[in-house]
Figure: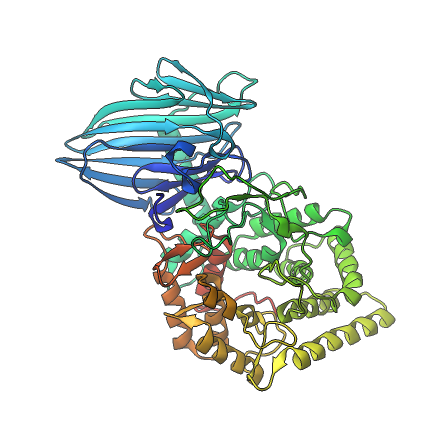
Length: 587
């Protein structure tokens, strides 16, 4: 069985990423891109589906794992018998070929160790044709080629590379795997000392630009580095998570592929990056969105591939058992074709936010805005699938209607040159949407807004209403909604997203705790806000990572990992609790 998520660290190069367990095993890697097929898929199955482990041979081993300060270089230390060794894992910034480096350093005494690499392309289904050539193994499947270089002699056990070795105090032994095309010569190895220095400098220079005041600098810096690792360097798009099918409910089937770019995350992403001082990354994300939408705003999807591609057909890798025996393993995401009205509000809001931050608007952005507004004139009245991408009956979700209001509001505020007739028409539309939400989305008996028109269930997304400027945080209806969410959706200090999620065994949705803290802070309940936020911080793994959810009963992280939305929320809330922010609902 694979390890709990909190035992994994992330390494990456901005184009792909790997999960490294504290037992020395890389159990997940997709190459050459985040959304490519996995070549190590033991995370979602068994060892036979691909892994790369380096660990002591001794039976009794103690391990600790930590990042080097302000970097994405991951150190795992093993104490075995009378000795100790450290494995440093990292991915250098890519030139032409993807690379993983694993340096083994003798820390104390000597340690007998073993390296095993089991490449399995196609999500664990296909072993490579493998050849041993001195101290390198070449593995080929179709167009893909991976080459392992080792500082010790290698052996080939059918398709798998193996090495037994002893590392002594002060000695370092390097293992380097590089990825390339099988139609080209194998990529050469690299100088590891140079790569370590360059990779450390890259990350420290990048995070060194962060200088905003916060009482939680370590957590914020780690979250920012994690987010940077999830931004696709060639395109500027941010992947929601580098994993697929990590279950929301153990054995429940809510397993989804998150290796894509969600338009819904647009404003969360831009707000966090701008407030942290990263304008270049915010602009790149804005530009990625406009490229993905291209010349057809009427055909907007809620998510796209990293390169802006639209095809995400969903299928099941039924040879994989699923994470900790929780199938199915899904590749692709059928929710891409859902109608989710809130996305339109996010798109216009991000244009408004970047303009307020001083990022120049481009003509395409204005054209997209106008097309969205014209579509929303009638579409806002239609039901949809909501922010949580329900695969059930479409409903009139309150948060979706709120974001339709946001779209019209930001368009009016950001477009001073429209004629009086159009301004009057859209002003009336904004008022109509607002009045409808306040009438149909608020239940006087419950004393709160509800998830959808005609229902009584709660939705933690309602916590965003004051954040986007729909109503003031101290409006009695908002106060009633916040207090009811605290009563009904909060457990052990963390917030579930809906009543149904809590009752079905899903974990608490971690971003929602940040949204609650934001609301409490806006209401002047600062001690409560800090307590909620600090409870969220307690859910972080030992190396500071967070997933989509937290299983309160099992006391472990759940859902896809690490999750961009959670880390975005952490950054925004940590900064907002300590100083003024560029607010989404501001003027």
